[in-house]
Each structure stands twice: as C-alpha cells, then as structure tokens.
Length: 591
Ligand code: G6P
Image 1 (cartoon, rainbow, N blue to C red):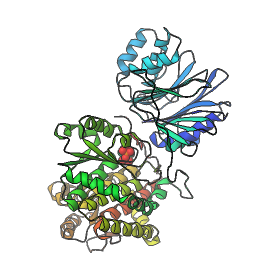
Image 2 (spheres, helix red, strand yellow; image 1 turned 90 degrees about the vertical axis):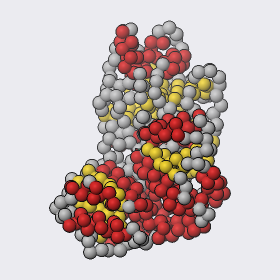
Image 3 (cartoon, protein in one colour; image 1 turned 120 degrees about the vertical axis):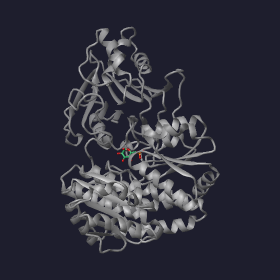
Image 4 (cartoon, helix red, strand yellow; image 1 turned 30 degrees about the vertical axis):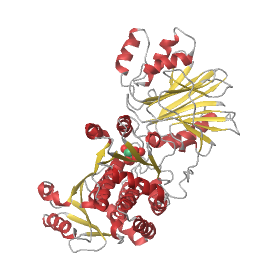
C-alpha cells in the first residue's frame, strides 16, 4: 500500500512538513518510513524501520522534501528496504507506492548490465532502470518516463533530484497534488486529507500522467504516452472535519465510534434529488451489483440485502478481489454500486475500470474527496463522515449501510420513512454511546473475550452481515480467531465444535426470525458453550446479555455498535495497537 508525500515551497522546514503529512498517511502502511530533503545540490536521507510516530528528524533545513510510509510487499521490514531509495551516484531518490509486477526480469537484466542492488525491494528496480536510461541522456525527466513505461502493475512514484527537481508519475496507485497559491507551496500525496489544512486547491493526477517541477518554475503535467500537456482540474478542497486530532480520546477507534450519530445524520443531509435519481436508475436496472473489499465488502453485501428486502431489487454483492468472475454476466442494463472509504481500493478499481469500458453505469459512495472511484462513477455520493484514521473501519461502515438503507427505502417509494428511521437511529445511537452502564457491560465482556482462542458469531437475515463484520472487528482488534455463521447453518457443521468453554455470540432479533436464532442459542448452550445475546430483550438462554436499543427496521445498523465497542475494549485489554492492527492497512492500493 504505502503512502507517499512531497513538499516544494519557501518553508525551509520541508522535512517536518513531510513528516506531518506522512503521519496522516500512516494508515496506508506503518512498518517503516523515510524522508529525503534537498539543499545545496545534495540530497539528505533519513529512513528507518519502525513507527513514524517515534520519528525524530535530524535532516538539515530544506525547501523541498519527499517522504514515504511503508507497508512491505517486497523485502522484509528493515532500514535498507525503507524508502526513499538512492541512485548509485546519489543524484536522485525515489519513493514508490505500488507493486512492480515484472520486477524480477527487470532486475535480472539490470544485474546483467552491471547494476548493483542494495535492497530487496521492487522499488530499487525503478531507480536502477532510471539510471540505465540516464546513461544515454542527461535528462532525468526523459529517463524517468522511459523507465516508468517499462513497469507493469499499478505504480506511482515521486522522484526528487539533487538540484531540487521533482517528478511524479501515476499509473494506478493514487496521487493528488495540492497548491497554496498565497504561499506558493506545492504538495503531492497519496490522499487529500494529508494536506487538507495546508492547500487551497487540489487536483487528482490521472493514470498515465507525469507531473514535473523544475526548480523555480511551475508544475507541468503531461501524458506519459502522448507527451501532450494535460490540464489538471483544480478544485477547492473542503474536507469536513479535516482536523485529525484525538480530541482527548485515547484512540481514534473510540473517537470514531462516538462519531456514529454524526455520520448517520450526514447521510440524511445528502440531497433528496440525488437519492431519487439513483432510485430511478436502480429500478431501471436488470441486476444491481454491489462491490467492495474487506469491511466495505460486508457493507456492500448489506446494501444488496437492503435492496432485496426493502425494494425487491435483484441485487447481488461481489467481493472486490473476485468480482472479475462476474464480468461476462454484467451488461449495460445493469448497475454497479460501490461503497468505498478511500475510493482507491485496487481490487475494486480494476473491476470498475473493466465495467466502465463495457459502458455499465456506476454509482459510488466514497468518504475520501478526490478519489479515483468517484471520478469513474456516473452517480457520485460522498459520505462526508470526516476522516477515518483508525485502520479498523467503524463509523464509515455504519455510514455506508445507513446510506444503503435509505437508498433501498427510496427505491420502494418510502424515502420519508427511511429518513425518519435514520434520524431516530442517529439520536438513539448517541444515547447508547454515552450510556455508562452499557459501556461497563461491554468492558466486562471484553475480559471474557480476551481469554478466548475461538469465538463464534451467529446472525440471520439482516443480521448475518452484521455478525460477519463483528467477526472482522474481533479478528482485527484482538487477533483472536472468530467465525460468523448464519444461525440456521450452525447445525450443518459448526455445531460439532460446540463444547464447554466455547464462546458464541448471537444477534437475536425480535421479529418472526427470533425463534430460529434462539433455537441455535439453545443448541450451543446444551453442548456447554457460553452464550452472549445481543438483542433488545434478554432471554434465559443467554449467559451474558448485551442490550441494544429498539430501533425497529434499522436495528441491524445499530447492532454493529456494541461489537465495535467490544472489539475496541478487547484490543485495549490485550494491549494491542488499537488504531494500527498488525499487517493491516486502511487503504489497499495494491492487488
Ligand atoms: C482495507 C481496510 C478495510 C476496508 C477495505 C476496503 O482492507 O483494512 O477496513 O474496508 O480496505 O477499503 P475501502 O477504502 O475501499 O473502503
């Protein structure tokens, strides 16, 4: 994944500006970091394995700097493998986000040409390739362009030369550029949030575009294949709540869970006309495909569920990484709906690019402004949930499924009822989240969970995806194995594992499905399992009871909240890194 950042301007504190940008990009990878600053026709590099929050810079005063926060793909986590990577003659450095899929043959041929490699990364192949093209020409820009064209995969690089020139090239992995006209400063980054408080205008760099800054001049953008000048579309950057401080909370995760009432409200603020227009497209479509990855894949499945349940729509959900399988079945009569926090998930993007070529219409709900998924979409919605910093998604998941619920209600002609229910949800969730008794109950349950090796979660119908998302949160936060099953399927296999000591958490609705789920609870309890009921009403078959408020039709939405809190308190209890679970990145821009 990785995050890349660059600063060019009059501030001689460029390395520190890059450092603060990288801290905001840390969600993209946090196993190592590095910064290069340029001054007096020299490049100074500081890089190391470990968290950027512990970084203490000792680079000299520089007006231009680039930086990188790494999520290792090629080569272990080490100081040497951290970016930036130097050219042999120390005349330029490269930071890179992506995967060079053909790095092995390229590396072999460069070694044959006499190039020496010092790291195990695919990025170093880019550096040596630029050097190899430079042997024939002095122009770094030309060499960078030629080298880049040799790479396969989704790659984005920023190159800093010792004379202060900066070259940025995008193909796949995200790249945005921001400017502050009054202070004459330029920022490059993997996302807009990282420089949101410093720029006035921003532009999304398109695939195949090269941006070149030569000392003292302005940024020139052109297409790497045609060489034609590209015009950047500069837009004002309004990112609600771009301030990403902890505001007194110990972790972003709990801060963001507490923002759930706000994010639900934000969904009700989206223009009614947009909902009505999308509803029209959904009704016209033969099949609606919803697609997403990870937690967002679960949100996509829940959105499809709401479309089927509330609006009788033929909706199928796909997981980003495997969505290609459906390509032969998708036609122009269909509609693709994509929720995505970042708007940059590579698995999803690759699928959308293919779908777009077949002229299939795309509707999206994205939280990060200026994303590729928004650009590819015909019907664009924004969560406006404010930045989500914790790698475990909480508030954005709730925002996504609340939006899906309102979309489904609009399709069924019940927009006002949907709005009323979401407004109630916003209020009720606020009270729930400030209820000290609930918080104490969840904390004491977290102690039980933290001692387990395996946990089963049961859900049915609109609560099955919720059980799955609860599973994801428990796994990510506590590293405890968890397994979600439709409660009705329990008897077909997992019941064999039910014995004394097993923990089973069931989401129990109060509608006609109640008895089905309670049967499963009784069955596991009869075999000695310890049961936890998440429900609006207690039941004698629950060993532990986690109450949730009664929100009627939108209960499945609020049902995820106690699980998010449970995952949070369990992670805290275990002393885990709550906001940065091991090996996981928030935005996965590699395949
Ligand atoms: C990563 C994150 C998940 C997220 C998924 C999709 O795997 O860890 O929390 O749901 O990517 O991200 P997106 O930005 O498309 O929502």
